[in-house]
Structures are given as structure tokens and as C-alpha cells.
Length: 188
Length: 322
Ligand code: SF4
Ligand code: SF4
Image (cartoon, rainbow over all chains, first blue to last red):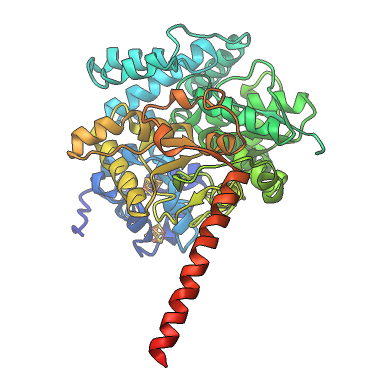
């Protein structure tokens, strides 16, 4: 494994913030590497998940929040299931992702765009309109032709509808979005 | 059989790209005497994207639905989709253990959720509440050419504290359900390995590589079909199989079939009723069916044909020994 570059000063406030938001104690990690050994995405991560844990213990906020790893993590729960110290590693990754989003430091813009199209669709219709998500994502990301060959396959089997179905309580769902955004603004 | 009834959350995928999962599950549940009632006007559970935004927000999107179930006076909600299941279970787990969290979630909702609903996967209902004997009793047909690798996906039994179902490293529920339905099930080392489905759209190549491993391991296990319980896995492995072949220079052609579709076939329902025409890689060639009686007869005849041979061989062996 590469040596870890501890280029930043330890950001103690960041460690405390992660502790508080995740309810987890990163210092319990003794670097056994079990989480990384089972992580199906580790070859695509810029920092393996156990290295993220080490970087977290030493408060390397910038490195962590701008890492690709926190966005390529699929929340598969393998690391949490296998950590001998019972650290909920998946939940820490999740918390770091939320923090990166909040601070505008997202390294994997396409993934964020995809999630955002999903949430847009949900806010509008109350349920997910698959076609709408795909088109929304293509439009915003500029990857217009990606997956184009899949279209005819799903269409010919009548699996994807071209028109959204909006539930009666869509406004109630949108309310959840609005209340959350207001609250987030207040706590800013 | 006594009728059982559950609140049923199909989820958004099952209204679109995973229609055949919903269709086949309903057919099978009905055959097993289970009544599924949908909460009126349910909304999306929030799934992966919501929990990249905020945990309270994500829990609120899930809890709106749990609230609807509470109003139906139902204590158990079943959903076939592992992603929806996880959203509900996490909301339930965190809200029932942490009053401050519960308060924050309820602030986002119109009506407060009182944490009275337990969510279970439809696989769990079939395995635990219906049981293997009842599953086996309903079988009418055998598919002699079919060899199945059961693929659970990553989160059906993980993390154990939240999932509260089956084994987190080596789940066996689907293996047992399919075996009870008279299906030949293979040992599959990759039964829980993540296929990458969540990133299919923005990270196509990475996902193709992960899928290729799952497909290859299924072939290695001697299977000619993968049984799935997750709409995202199905879509990813089936719809993108040609993409995988292009990326990897491979030529996979493995049908990816919902376990409920396979059960339905064993119960004698028509492929059409079970949405078998909706999957991309066709399973027609491997799902030839004969009735249980015919199958038993063939097996008997085979055994009878073997016996004299065996007797002859033994006699011959004895002679040479002497
Ligand atoms: S949850 Fe994320 S970090 Fe953990 S094993 Fe899965 S992909 Fe890797
Ligand atoms: S499995 Fe747990 S203890 Fe081991 S390196 Fe990962 S987080 Fe640390």
C-alpha cells in the first residue's frame, strides 16, 4: 500500500464533527485492513476505505472530502459487516459524502448529477420516473449518447413508460424537500 | 391454507423496468395464500440518492410510507426491493433508538411516524412465514435443464444488526426456497458480491467490470441461469450484459431471472403471466418444463435401467475377483 501523505495539519474540529454526525468513533479503528479487503470498489478508489479511516484519524479534511472514494462507495455494507472493531464504516463513508456535498467539494460530479436527477424526479412526481431521470442526467452531464443502445431494449418490452405518473400526494413529498431545505438554510 | 395478509410496497422500479418482478411475486404470493395490500398513494423511499444528502431527510422520505402503513393498522410491511427495504429498515432502526433523531424526522413530516412497522423482504416472508414445506407442496413442474446460481446482491442480509435476516456472509434463504421449488441450485461463491448497479448510468465501464465477475463466477459454478431478488441487480446484469460483452470482449448469454419467476414456472404458471417475455436474455431454452409426475416416471425408468446394468457389472466384477 502507498504511504499516506499527511499533508494537512490535523483538523480536530473535523474529527469531532464526523464523530458527532455519524455517532461513530474513528479512533477504534486499528488498521487491520479487513474493510478494504472486502470492498468491491477498492481498485477504483483513490484511497482504499481503510486509508480513509486513517486519514480521518489524523484529521485530513481536504484530502478526504475531495476524494473520489467517498463517491464511488456503493453503500454495500461489506466493510461494516466485517469490521472487527464494530465501526460502522459504511455510515462514516455516508457521513463524509454528505459533508462533501454540503461544502461543495464533490469530486465525482457525474455521480452527484445522477443522484440529483433522481431527487428532482421524486420531488416533482412523488415517485421515480425512470425515463425522466435518465434524460435529466444526460442533459445536465452532457453525456447525451451514453447507454443509448439500451433504450430500444427496454422500450420493446414495454418496461419503461414515456410519461410520468404523479401521485396524489406529490405535494406532500415536495413539502418534505422544502422543510428540509428551510431547516438546512437556518442552520446554514 | 390460512390466508396471510401484509402491507406491500412494490417500489418505483417495479412499476417500470422491473415490472416482471411485481407480476411474478403477486402470482406466487396468491398461489401461496398471501394477500398483498398496497398503501394508498405511496411515494418513493428515497433510496441511495437521499442518503447522500442528509440522514434525517432520507429517513423522512422513507417514514412517510411507514406512516401510511401504520394507518392501515398493519405491523409488517413487505417489499421485494432490497434498496427500499434498507431505506425503511434504517429509518426504523434509527428512529426507534434515538428520540432526538425521531423528533427531527417527524418535524419534516405532515404526520408523525410512531415506529410501529417492521419491514421484511418478500424473500423473508416466503422463507419464514410461508415455509419450505408449503413452498414445495405447490410445485407442479420440474425444469430438468435449469441450473441456478442464487444471487442475493449486497444488502439483503447486511449489516446483520439492521437486516435481522439470514447470514450476512453466506445467506441460504433463496437457495433453500428454490430447492424446495424443485430447482437445481448451485453453490455460488459470489452470491453477495456487489454488481455495481447503483452506478450503472454514470460509471458504465466500472460497473461492466464488476458485473463480468459475477457472470463469470456463475458459469464457473456450473449454472446456466442467475436467480435474483433485486430489481437493480437484475437490470444491471441483464440489460447491460451486451455492454459487458463489448467492454470485456466476452460472450456471456446468461438469463437473469427473478426467483419469483422461477417459482411461478415451477408452479405451472404461464411464462407470459410471469413476465418471462420482459427479460432481455431469454430463458426459453433452459426452462423446458415437464410435470412432476412425468419427471418422477423418467427418474424411475432411469433408475430401473441402471439397476440391471449395475447388477451385471457387479456380477462381472465378482467373476474377475474370483
Ligand atoms: S460500503 Fe463502500 S467502502 Fe464499504 S465495502 Fe462497500 S463500497 Fe467499500
Ligand atoms: S475493518 Fe475496521 S478496524 Fe479494520 S481497518 Fe477497517 S475500519 Fe479499521
